[in-house]
Length: 57
Image 1 (cartoon, rainbow, N blue to C red):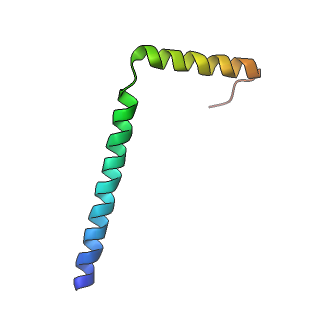
Image 2 (image 1 turned 180 degrees about the horizontal axis):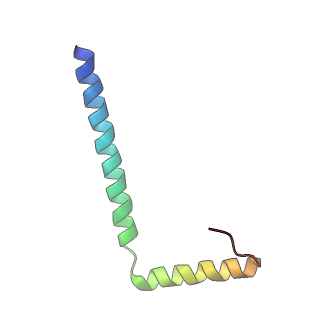
Image 3 (image 1 turned 135 degrees about the vertical axis):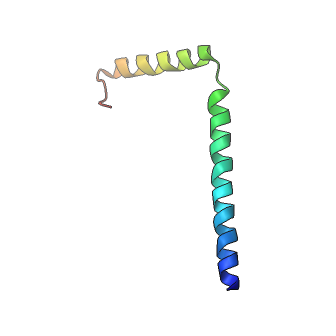
């Protein structure tokens, strides 16, 4: 029965690690100001326009 405990702890550690990664990604995403987001979107739009085609979503 001891291996069940080890398996449970490993699963718990995996879930906790996944949560940490998700929180860090969310923090990084929210760190942008609205102006930075607009600038990046405009750059992407200009890049796509210069390629001459619009990708399908």
